[in-house]
Each structure stands twice: as structure tokens, then as C-alpha cells.
Length: 456
Image (cartoon, rainbow, N blue to C red; front, side, top):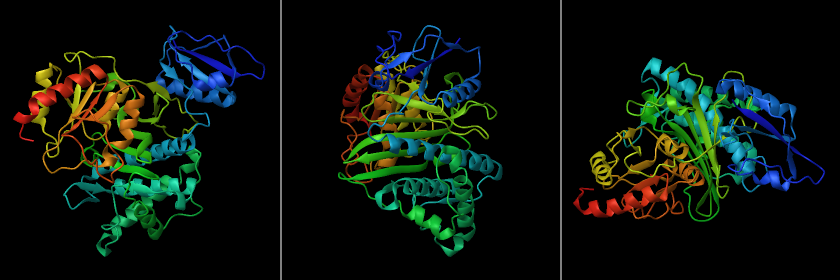
């Protein structure tokens, strides 16, 4: 049985309420001199979706309150407070989360349509990797939302896609489809508390929004990093993919938002070794994870359903990495495609440290999401010679894992450097993400012992 408490801000100087010892009391509860009302709202065994609706309604009725949800033993199960304070980057995070939510819903609609129509409106880049309507539509949508919120002169974006293909005379039909998709998505902006365009965007405005994402990054100033559809192969095949948005300031990732439209809210819906998409009719499919540097918490929200309106914090609950530190009990993730990762080396490495569970091979940054949420403990990627990692494939997820208690480094144990442009320059051999330091140290040692005998 779940219990929802109201923590009411009080004008009088009440002592801080007594929370269960296992809880980490949010800082805004301390600074606002809050008192905990001891009368709980007792939940019957509602589904997650039903609880979400109830808590959203409760939040509206108690606009000056923080709503907290505990299990029957007072443990940290769901915390409905989030970044509602006025801390550094809180406004950017709020807009970023909403923009990614909108993009995820856009992608869900397009993926369902794409699976039915097969490869219609799927093009190829110079490296033969696929790009779809979703890639350009998400990039245009997020670019427009950020520019509208903060001013186009104040927004610099590093993103994966450009306008070269869409600008060709032969791509008229493709551009029309992108424009239609963008306008459909932006029309839903008020549902998320964002401003919609005064009139529908035309092809020129959509191309400008996509082309505006032309920053090359660097070690000074502020810029956003966007991967509109990470794991396009997974998207095309009806599998996992992600929408990733990060904000970098002076070379440091300060916030990250990771939308996973096909990733289930509940771990028990995961199928670890045969793809990880839940049944299509489940109401628990799709989530958005996010974190802000220095808060030491990461969060997850469910995607909206139907005509629901986004009410911050949208039933957010705190996520944490797994406490498992025994390699025999750990699950590790690796990319599905062999083109940019050596499965043979990671398999040998896994065997050498005692990993016995079958690997979770999944498209996109959903691998990182699995680590951040405690569904897996290890992600390893060792690219073949000549492959260069791009910052948009990692930035958003790294800060989410770190704030959830995990570690992400290269194979030499160094933090990833996002200050060198669009690539992760100076990367030592590969990338290792772990739930804890013990597993991390074990893997780093194993890489050193095995590297010289590898063909990478």
C-alpha cells in the first residue's frame, strides 16, 4: 500500500518534519521550514497510471505543497518533488524535459507508422546509416522550443543532422512530411505548458530551425547537445531508441535529459535477452530520465498518455543505480551492432571478470538508461580502430548515471571530455559505465590485462 504525504510550507517557524531515517530530505523542505502533515492519503493497489492521475490532481489542489509518495515502510520508492526550486539551470531543465517529452510522443507516432509502411521516408547518410523523418522533425521541434524559450540569439546547439538532404529539389516530399510532423508536434506545446507558434511553420522556417543547430562545441560558453533519434536502426526496426538532450557549459555537462519512448517504466516488463520492448498495448511504455549536475539525484517520469496535460513534476520518481557489486550477479549491456563495437572483446572481458549473465544488447543510449535505473550494472563499448565517439551519443546519459550514483569513464579511468568539439577526443580505448566503483575498478584492471592481446 502506498502513502502520499503533504509537506506544507508554513509561515511559522515549525521544526523540520521527521521523515523516516532512510529518506534523503529534499533541500527545499529545509529552507522553506516545512511541516509534514501526519495524516496520510492511503492508496489502494492502484496501477502506476492511476496513481499518477491521483497525485497530479492532488498537486493541483495543493499548489503550494510538495507531494511525496512512500511505500508502507517509509522507504524511497517515489518522490513527487523534483527540481521545483529556483536552483541553477532549473529553468533550462524544465524546458528541456518538456521538449524531450514532446519529441518522444512525436517519435512514438512516427515509429508506429513506419513499422506499418516499412522503409518509406528513410534515407541514408554519407556513412550509410539511416535517417528518418523523425530525426529531422525532432531536431526542428527541439530547436524551435529552445529558441522560443530562451531567444534564438542565446541558444547554440550541437546536433547530429543537417539540412543538406532536405534542401535538395528531389526531397520536396520528404520536406513536406517533416514540416507536417513538426507542426503537429508544436501544436501540442500548450499541453506541456509551452508556447505554440502563432501560425504553422513553413518549409523555410523548419529548415532554419534544423540548420540553426550548427555549433561545433568547445571548452568555453554554453551550448546544447542534441541527438534527435539515437539508435535510428532500432527506431526503424520497431525496437529501442532514445531522444537525448544535454546542456554543456565551459566544457562540463550541467544537465541531461534522456527520452526512451519504448523503455518500460517497470523493470519486470523488460525482456533482457530478446530485445527490451514491452508489449505494445502496455500503459507503462515510455519514460524520460533527467538530472542536473551537483544535485546527486536523477529522476524518471512516465510519458503522457492521450489527452493528459503535463503537470510538473509529472509523477517523477527518483532513480538510482543498482547496489550489485558481484560480477557473477551483474548484467552488462553492449551495442547491438558490431560495426562500431567489438563483441568478441567484451565477451572475453566479461568472462575474465566472472560476468555470467547473458549480455543485454540494446540499441541507443537506452543502455545508459538501464544502468541509471538499476536494471543493469555495466555498459562496455570498445570501438574498432578509426571510429570516433561523438558527444551527442553520450552527454545526456553520462550526467544522469553520475547523479544516480554511477560512474562513466574511458577504459583508462578518466572522465569523458566534452570540451574538445563534437568528438570525445583523447578517449582511452573505450567507454565503461558502472553502477559502482568496485565493478568499475575490476573492469579497468581487466582491460589493462587483456588489451595487448586484442585486435582493436
